[in-house]
Length: 222
Picture (cartoon, rainbow, N blue to C red):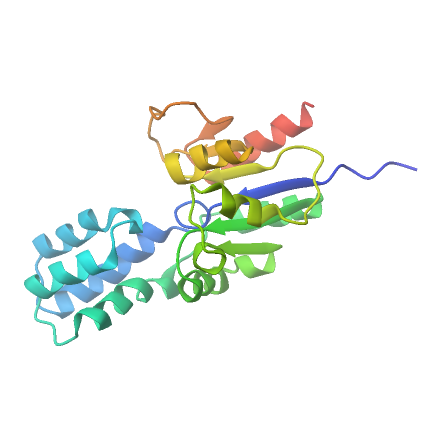
C-alpha cells in the first residue's frame, strides 16, 4: 500500500497576498471621494496615505473631514474606511484553484491576518476563501499582531506537520521576518519589488501563484 504523504502546513496572509485589497480599496475610494465633492487630488491623497491599509483609519478620517463635504462623524467615517471596501475584495486570478489543489494534496491551509474579526471575516466570505481554508487566525481574536510570534503559534496550534510550516505574504516585516522568527520557511510575494530587508525569504516571486508553485517545487525536490 502506498504510504500517505506527510502532512504539510501552509500559513498565508490575506490582504494583497490572497486577495487584492488595494484594488478593492481603490475602487471604493474612486466612488466615495467624488460623491462627496472631492477632487482627483483628494483621491490621490487618500490612496497614497492609505499605506496598503496600515495607516490608522483615524488618520485617514481626519484628513477626509478636512478635505470633503461630509456630515459623518469621525467615528462613523472610521467604520466606513474599515468596511467600505471589504465587500469588493476578490482573490487574485487562479488563487482559489491553487489553494483547492493544495488541499487535495493534503496540505493544511491557515490564513493568518492582522485586522478586525468582522472586517477580515467579511473578506473571507465574499472572496470565496472560506470554502478552501482550514483555519483563519485574525489578530483581534488572538490578541497578537504579526510579526509577533504568538499569532503564528496560534495559527498552527494542534496541527501536525513533518516539516516547519511555510508562511507566505507580501509584507517584509509582518509576514517574512515574523515568520522567520517563529520558525517558518517563508515565501515573499514581491509584487515586483526587490528584496532589501535583511535575511531573505526561502522563496520569492512577483505573484502569489508563482510563490506557491516554488513551494511545491521545493517540497517535490525533498
